[in-house]
Length: 152
Image (cartoon, rainbow, N blue to C red; front, side):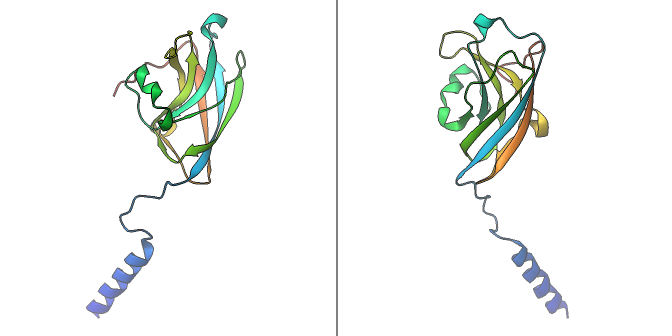
């Protein structure tokens, strides 16, 4: 009787595991869609050269990390001087995104970008699964910009 219970428990345990200790399969691509809410005083037009969603699969240490384009998902340009906007980035690399938000290009210099709003739900981390769409919401408060680089 005891042996039968052990075999039954072992069988149930093994049938519940689909890949054992393997990490989940993050091959392929997915989609990120988001909504943005803007509050506060918009920056002067000369300080607002570009505005985009940037999803990073790492936490940046300084602006030179922005050159790791293969580890980022970047939207097209976003609307300016609006209360709300939406974005969509198709065919992004699947996996975890650890630091994501809305970035403002404030000068002509290539590395003159700063975050103006961050994704903060779920500790700021979200994942993109193969062939799936991940929805996020970001609030940008121009009167209370995030600290950059982030404290670790």
